[in-house]
Amino acid sequence: MTDTKLKCWLCDGSNVSVFMNQEIDKNLKSTDVRITDDRYGKTLPLYKCNDCSFVFAYPLPENIIELYENLEDESYIDSLKPRIKEMQHLLKAALKQKPDAKTVLDVGAGVGLMVNEAQKRGLDATGVEPSKWLVQKAKDLFSINIIEGIVPNDELKNKKFDIIFAVDVIEHLSNPLEFLETLKNYLNDSGLLIIATPDCNSVLAKKLKEKWWHFRLAHIGYFNQKSLAYAIKKSGLKLIRFTRQVWYLPFGYLYKRLSNYLPIGFLNKQIGKIDSLNNFPVRLNLRDSMVAFIQK
Image 1 (cartoon, rainbow, N blue to C red):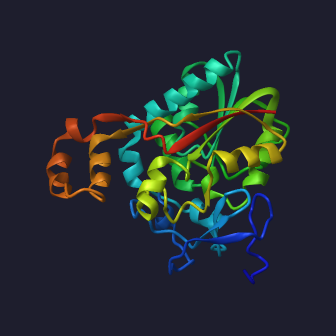
Image 2 (cartoon, rainbow, N blue to C red):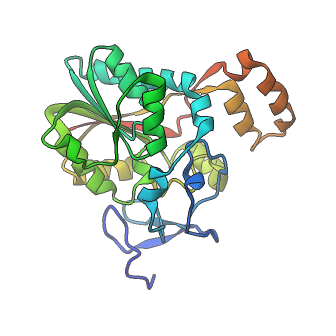
């Protein structure tokens, strides 16, 4: 590689090779990073570090933060009820590990699903979210005040938390090590950090290749257990264990996306008309997303 800027974001190595090369206009719009975007396999050009196995996008758009600040996604709002179960599942697992927790921080809080569930359990919960639209939706739907912005954030200055969540966030960031170090600074000495992100070394990722549903324009960094463990250690944190992420999605939402892979799309309209079926929550563990439990 002749471009000196093309270095691994984790190990700073230049031993990289093309992983997935597509002719994509890097001047993305906010609609390109929607949570529910289903244009699977459409990505920025991706490169793989042959030393630490991290996969990253290059070149990057210059307006990444702005894209998320202006993000709106009505389809995401339509699928909230089952997604609440996902937050409940993660919160339960976190409290099992850290039963004495009193404070929670959710980074990339969306409309405040995790914050709302934590508050229901009597925890002092705070959320941070860059999307102005999602922050307003949190107020409208749950009467929750989410901090608008990213971390580090002035509103969190000198604050520490017992549990910090970053669920499906780190894959959107061009500075994963800085992000982990920032979260470490917000974590109490005996606190618990939970990172959930796709696993690009999973069986499904290898099987589906460029058709894998996590290959999307919004995702610019792809980890496997090796590279995430490396990033955690390099950030001065300690990995406790990995588990697999459990998803809860509406049947109609899931069916529509399966039609990208199977010839079943002709039933999408009919399913959409049956509200009880369309919104029926489906529990999934496809073992292609990982959850890291982390301590200082």
